Image (cartoon, rainbow, N blue to C red; front, side):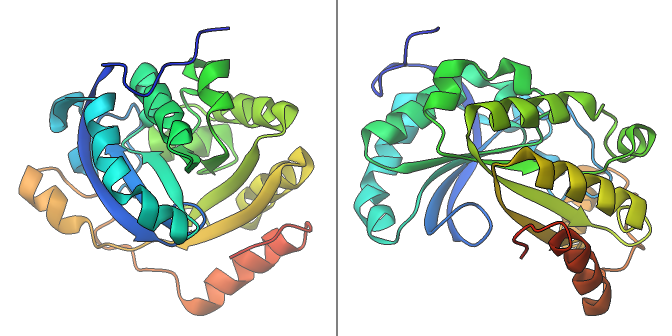
Length: 251
């Protein structure tokens, strides 16, 4: 097992941005560190400005944790913690591990927001410093997943099973896009898999929106779903009910 990285280690990385949030980034108020770089190209991605490592600023884990420390008292009082997000944080596993380990040393709850596509890069030390994994399972059918993301579903499912074996708490996140991820066979596949893991505390069904379209325009990148509507309330509730039908807690 790799040694745990101390908080003050000068581990380099690329940070896109950070924010304070309350909602689906984990329990309570979170300091969310958005890392740069992602291997997937999801059709519904709202943050194309995080796709490349060059999109982030060079920094170190110590510098980021210094900023986190300034908010630590407030975040603890609000029942929150640190969430490492992206992009895809496991594209920078050493940096991610250092951030999570340092946050634990600050007494903060920790969460890892990942697609699981690079789950094999998360070593035991990284997962030992992770209280919660926010796992995006984007589709169920392998061919559909490939069309939707440009990647493969198998690594995500393998990572989910590994987390189940460790007993690591998981919140599954499922983005609902009309005409893309609303088919019952797709929803039921993800729901059945999640329900069988035994460590999924909740499922967040996240309605698609087009708020990131301006970023595509600014970057000169075509946005494939520009004309796709947001799901209506009825569809969102029907999909949530299919997840609930497997015994999962759903939001």
